[in-house]
Amino acid sequence: MAVQSVIDTSRIEAMVAQLKAAAAKAQGVSEVARPGALQVEKAAPRVDFSDVLKGAIDQVNTSQQSASKMSQAFALGDDNVNLSDVMIAGQKASISFQTSIQVRNKLVSAYRDMMTMQV
Image (tube, rainbow, N blue to C red; front, top):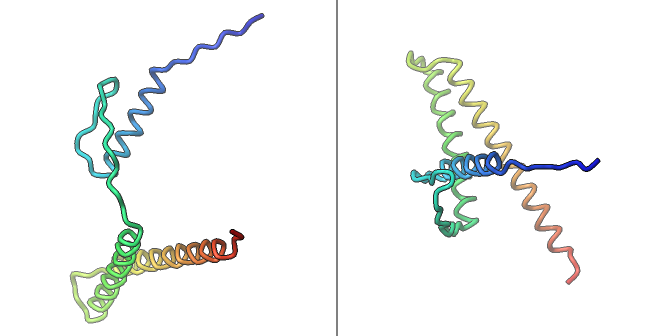
């Protein structure tokens, strides 16, 4: 007996369109082509690694400063600041700092691996 396999490409195309729409939404692109419509591929803008790294470090710094200001305001008795908000901001800052440390460790490890490679 021969088994005949038919692949439904319309479902695959719909999923690819959903993935492209999600990627465009993540990049902030407002126009997303409809499935089946003629799509024009645009070249992705060049991203400088140092700018991305500096931006991430600035975000970590901002979250730490915000958590510090909130905790200081709570300690001074500000009625507009809740203890739960202070604790959540502190945990967010801690998690972002730990993440940046792990990224740094991976970068240092990759650098060491590159330096020990034989050419």
